[in-house]
Each structure stands twice: as structure tokens, then as C-alpha cells.
Image 1 (cartoon, rainbow, N blue to C red):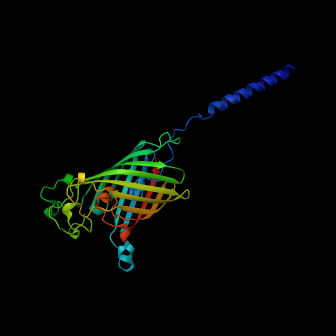
Image 2 (tube, rainbow, N blue to C red):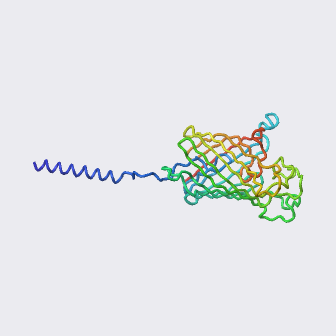
Image 3 (cartoon, one colour):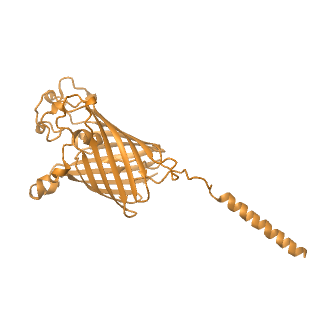
Length: 319
């Protein structure tokens, strides 16, 4: 009988220990305030930046290519494949949690750019924080300005005149496993953007938009807003749409009338991604790649067949 009692007491103790161990390993039953999965697979959405910042010590290699406009047709320009093109090669590195720095070189303007992206707050899985807020800024150095050409740059040209800046606040949300959106107000500034002589055709000043005829009317500052949406149809494939919209705000304008104001940049296409790669193929309006160039310079009209084929490729390494 004592043996039976001993077995029952031992079994009861084992059941209690097992229950205690299970309680100790269970996750808290409160709200899950861990960061939600990123709203986008890549730090790029065609011509736009996204709120995605890779994990610490991640290195990202970026190739961005833009062909010419399709408006000249098949025989003349093979829908832009034979015409003018633009390309940018860049490197991005996440030096701290939620903080990325980057460098790039672009064909047009022989530009060198330096960028920074920081996630201020991140959307949580419990939606206690419903959106991700990201600060992005970029500085471009125009290395192609002919400093010895006084007609083009004037007589008081300085090295700092080559600088332009772009800053935006990206507000993004991942609604579910398929749908993500973002909205980004932005500010663009060029230290120098005016030729003193008017009515110079852009053929004589290649860094200006091709349709510009009165270059004295171009501004130094521009406020804009960008919108992007992604719909994921499979673990690797998404359809995406974006628009960059320069705003006409006379309060910061230097001229009474807007002459040749920049036009919106519409983009639509697809993304194919893996854990280390992202590939974008799309049609967009702007041949420029850096955001300040798109906001200040784009003269192509999407609805007049003035759009072009674009390709982005990113490769990620984690250290």
C-alpha cells in the first residue's frame, strides 16, 4: 500500500512540475508589440525609396537603369532602347539598427550622391503603432557642370553650387500579407539652378530638361508628395504603382508664373524578390533616378506616351 501511495505522490509531483515548466515557457498573453514585417521587400519601389531598412551590418548593392522614352516608336528608336539612357550604381550599408547610409554614382550629371535613411518608429504587430515613420535624405553633387563656361554657370560659380538636396518623411503601413501603402511629403533644394541668359535651348545645356526654353524660370526649391502601393500576389511576386507629384506652391516660388513646371512621375510595374535579391521591371515617366532630379526636372508626360522602361536590381549580403 505504501508503494501505491508513493507512486501516486510521485506522479502528482511530476504533473505539477510539468505544468509549471509549461507556464514558464509560454509567451505573454498581452498584445504583441514586436515590429511588424516590413511593408515592402526592398528599400526601393521603382523610383521611390521605401521605409524598408535592412538589418544591422547588411550590405546592399543596387543597379538602377532607365532607357529612353517610347514616344519615338519602333523604327526610329526601338521604343527607347536605342536612345538616351541613364544608370546608377550604389551601395547601402546598415551601420546601426534602423540606420542606413549609402553612396551612388549616376550617369546623367556624372552625379555622386550620399544618402541616409532612419526608421523613427516601426509599425507593431498589435497595431499599437499603426504606421512606420522613416526619414530619408539625399545629397547630390553635380560633377558635370562646366565651371569654365561663364554662359552656363555665371561668373561667381562655387563648388557648393553643385549641391542639391532631397528630404522626405515616409509614412508606410502593411495592411495584411498582400497590401502595403506609403505616403511621403518631401522638400527639394538646389543651391544653383538658374542660367542668367534666357531662351537658351536645352540642347546647349544638357543638364536641363530637354523641353526647357526659358531656363531662367526654374526654381531652387520644390515641395512634393509621393504615393506608392504594392499588392503581393505570391511569395515572390508583387504588382506596384507609384507617383511623385511636384506641387505648385507660389509661396516659395521665385517667379510670378510657373514656366515649364515639372510634371508628375507615374510608375507601374512588377517586383520579383527573394531573401537576397529584388528585381523591378516597370514603365515610368522620369528618366532621372535621384528623387530631387525627378521632383525638379521631369518634363515627360505619361499620357502623351512620354514614358520609358526601367529596371532595378538589388543584391543583399548579411555580415
